[in-house]
Length: 311
Image (cartoon, rainbow, N blue to C red; front, side, top):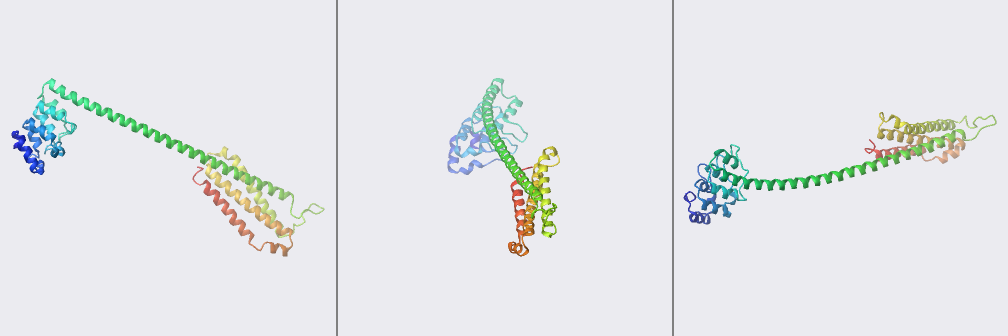
């Protein structure tokens, strides 16, 4: 009632005595601020805008979703509209249940003359323009930061890719080197047979089972290492059938297997040229098991080095 009648002193006294009175609403869910605006009590409106106790309620909505600014727009009181529109705490973009802002209400009611509308709208457009400029600057700054972060991520990805490609090439070169050495050694071992030849050019140890195993293992090592070399040389021509990763796994497996067979051939060659007693004493440790485990470890290590990096 005091807000409706414009009794500023009474309103001040009531607020000082009981802060909770600010939250009282009428049957339309309107606060004292709504009532003062609707009653066109300019001094009460100014007081409530400046009152700390009322700061959280100046944008409060009634049961139709109208703020005090909507109410002032519907009443068409230019002075109060000007006070509210120029206050920085007022939400000028608030909409009621009809989806209308205070500016849309002003333009639809025709209660203000063109000069008054132009003045209020000019002030609103200026603030909206400044707000838009601020948002644009923030957006451009964020876009620039995002672009910089994106470039850094792309550079990191490119560097990582280059490192992975280099690592893959190093592994391929190592595998090729090992396969070449094995092929060369096993070829030489086949020409220079263990135990030598007799006068007719026949291997002296041909009747021994160890010699036969030596020949078999040596041939397997030679052909597997040669096949590994062939795959590495021909893989660029058949790239659509084999990925770099699958090629590396295949050549690594073949090279490791040829290495194992070369070591088996060495074992059987030693057994073939030594006397049975000496050979038995020399190979007390299960040499074949050691060779097998070593080859598996080599294959597994190369697999871990290349896994997920050579697709």
